[in-house]
Length: 184
Image 1 (cartoon, rainbow, N blue to C red):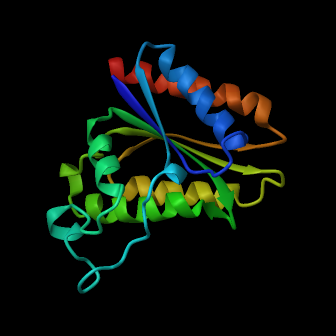
Image 2 (image 1 turned 180 degrees about the vertical axis):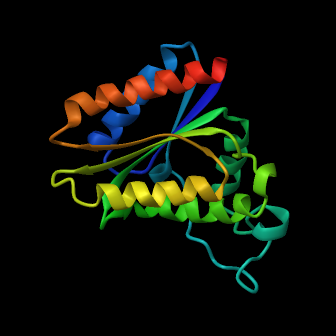
Image 3 (image 1 turned 90 degrees about the vertical axis):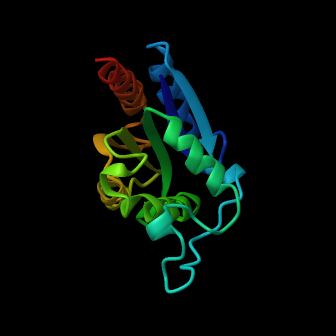
């Protein structure tokens, strides 16, 4: 069983990275494979709204913009579940995650129940750091994204510097629980 952990922070030693590490621990406690990808190490541009605004994404379910998106999109099809972790910038997910999720949504949403992500569980984590501001609006963006791609909303977790200690435990336990549910 493979769980893909996607992070989107340029800070490789901050709160988002700590969340990813705890998610990995939870996945591996059930002897599942945890694959961690940091979007900030990849070359994924924003959607170009090709052609009349849809390009090949609507009908062919592939993005015609050539960069690292295609490889990650294909790898996602092979995973059994997903944990997506983002810092919160201006009340929303990071720019690298927004670019990726916008393109992914365009390729998968029009595919309906045939989406390679349909009926697969998602844990989404918003990590707004210091103030905690924007956590709920970011989690709301995650909810719309998972709805569009027909994923299963397994858990949505907000973690700040104030609740970090127990929320890191929560992330590990949620990841472990998701893997257990996939074994049933």
